Structure formats: structure tokens, C-alpha cells
Amino acid sequence: MTRAAVPGLRSRHPIGAHLPALYAEDDLAQRFTAGLDTVLAPVLATLDNLPAYFDPRLTPADFLGWLASWIGWDDDPRWPLELRREATMRALELHRSRGTRRGLTEALRLVLGVGADVRGDGAAVWSRTAQSELPPPPAAEVVVRVWPLEAATVDVERVEELVRALCPVHTRCRVAVLPGPPTDEGGST
Image (cartoon, rainbow, N blue to C red; front, top):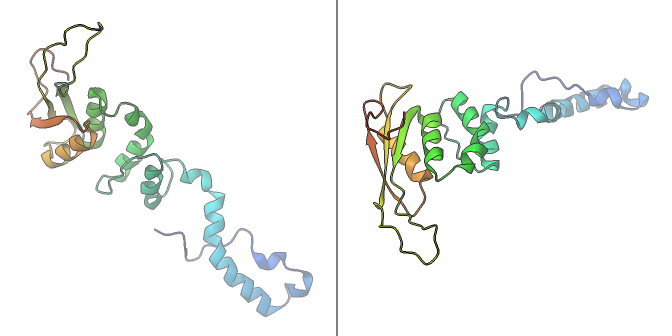
């Protein structure tokens, strides 16, 4: 959709009505300003509804991607419109937890409708005590286990794409697809 030319859209503020009395009865002046009204009506309608353009729930579908880019969210036009709106509304919340287990599981649940369990910490080690021995190095791989929640199957390619985008750069991530929630101890559902 474009707001450049909307057939039949009437201007709420016709220019011809604001001309001096001398031009009120002039046919050429009235037709000329009516042509300008046709061009300006979409602009005025957009300005009249400007607050709606900044609300992801109300913004026109073709503006949603641009709105998402303002807050650093990668809008994917392959997603259904309602999901794109929800993801854009929650983008700031998801940015706060980006690169964390919680952030990854929330993003996978929201965007792809899959449950997730993240194992491993990407080989990050630390100690609470200064000058102490470092803990033994953990596994250098993060395993993201996913299972279907809303959909009947898991689109592995899209899961891997999202995991690559949201995992920290220094980590190696592997995706494992499960038929259902893990039943082992420590597995989250």
C-alpha cells in the first residue's frame, strides 16, 4: 500500500474554500485547487493519523518494517502480520535479554512458536575471588534444544537462522530438534 495516491480520498481541508472571495466563483482556480487537494489529501490524512504510525498494533503493514528498523529489530516479511506486530512491540524487551538463555528461548517461542532449552555457556569462565585458580573450562559449544509448541513441526533452517542471529559471536551453537519437551533433570519446559 502507498499513501501517495488514494482514489476517492477527499481532503478534510479543501484549498478552494480558503481562497479569497475573488476566486470563490472562478472555475479555473477551483479546478486547479481541487487537483492540489487530490495530491495533498493523503499527506493530510497521514498527518492527521500520525500517532497511529508509531504504534506497532495500528501502523499500516507496509510501514511496520520501517518502524521496526527504528528500534533495531529485523522485521521478517515472511512472518504473519500479527506476529510481526507482536515482535516489534516486544523488540526492546528482547533486546535487553539478547545473547542470554532467556532472550534466546523467548525469541524462539515468540517468532517460531517452539519451546527451547539452552545448554552450555559458550566457554565463558569466571571466578568470584581475585587471584584464584580459574574453574575448569566448560564445553565450548552451546546446544539449543527445540521442540514444537504451536506448530506440528519445527522448521530447522529458520531455527538455525534465528539462533545464529541471536547467539553471541564468540559461541558455537548447535541446534537439536526434540519431539517434545525434555524429560531429563534440569530441562526446562
